[in-house]
Length: 451
Ligand SMILES: [Zn+2]
Image (cartoon, rainbow, N blue to C red; front, side, top):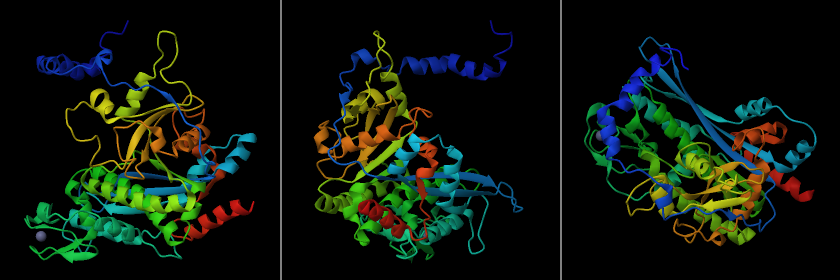
């Protein structure tokens, strides 16, 4: 029995759920009954890997924080974004597995050293040359894209890859002048590469204004959303950037030794979502070269750790009457458009799920050890670019992807991937971005070859 008054703190919440208005709304809402669904997700045994497993994993993972700063103005905040990039040596993991457990802390230390990081003006922080926090944020964003140099030898700033993606953006005069919110300039314009000028107010515009992240910027209040978009864009652009760097260095013939793991879905949400189509086009182009050189596709995976798909997978994987989980080890389900719309995100829209945001598609996978993985694989050819087929032979690296997942899941962190990678601290080679990262990578790949 609960003590009298124990739930006093929850009183307001109870008032909301018991209110007639809420009850009324729920009475008018559709309720999902799994028994009436026509779309089902039947687990299928994962195909075997057609190729040798990659020997390295390049993992990209970002984080961000918003901190209060004391500069005299009230509510001044700064955003801090980092994107870490780590190369994981699977052969070393094998060796370590035979030895002893490794503390995850060690890994996080090395990860920090290998990250690209940047501080951004947030609420009420105005840089000397600017007149508003928003304009300061825009200028810093453009500068940081220039400052992110992936390789000192090649001198490839992230802005090069970004502007190559901008070239692929369809031109519509649909973007408002970035000074609209603060100064009311009503001009609509196309944002060019480099820096330019608004034809209306004659003030500077930057190529990164096309990301439109500033439209979600708050001059007063939290900017966690805006910083989140920066991080999301950096993580995904870094993948394309590294692939383009490999191409430039003539290293695409080595790609079957490498798999790329990204934190989160293969998608870009919010105002910068147009990048998704550009990234998709670029991945298909690069993959067509990789296919010629290696006779197979790139291995790229985006892993989700939470969200509606994750919750849904948990639900359908419950034990049935006979005590068996929905998914046996090494089974998967490639998620179809119809299934998503009927069971996960209800809509009667004809438009494909994630049409404007995703450059890949999702699947559920139960690893050999029983971990549930929600992940996405990219569309690397036009044939793969569908949610209406569950023909797994469209995706020749799917077996390899599942086999990698089997190897990377740890028993200590159920259903999670990155932490278990981090548990193998000593197998991770921190890539010091901005140093000779491509040389490091080339050496690692070549070393394996001569072994
Ligand atoms: Zn203007």
